[in-house]
Each structure stands twice: as C-alpha cells, then as structure tokens.
Amino acid sequence: MAHPKRKISRTRRDKRRTHYKASVPTISTCPTTGEAHLYHRAHWHEGKLYYRGQVLIDNSEKEENLA
Image (cartoon, rainbow, N blue to C red; front, side):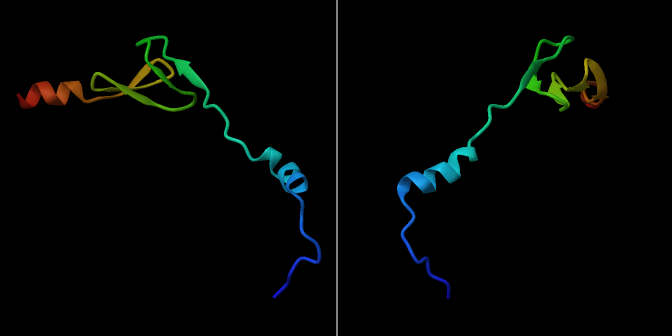
C-alpha cells in the first residue's frame, strides 16, 4: 500500500480543494403563472404542468370529471 513520503500541509491541501464549492441554483419566474422554478425544468401549478409558459399536462380536468 502506498504511503506519502511527506505530510501535505493544510495550505497545500486547501489550495487543491478551492474549486469544490456549491453553486447557487438559477431560479426563473414563469411569465404565465408567476411561479418561481429552476431554469429548463417544467413545474406544476394548480394541477397543470407548465414549461416555458405553456401548459403541457392539465390534471385539473380529470379531477373535475371524477367529482
């Protein structure tokens, strides 16, 4: 099993790890509903699935028919 010949200092170790950081997710606002959501993701609002301001799936009609 390999062992390091010298101890790596905290400074050198931390320099290597500077690029490992969490990024803030980019949030967009839907022009139709005003709902906040992640970019390039569909989102549900009041029983409808929206993507780029357009309705993809409408589950509210199914719920009304069942009642």
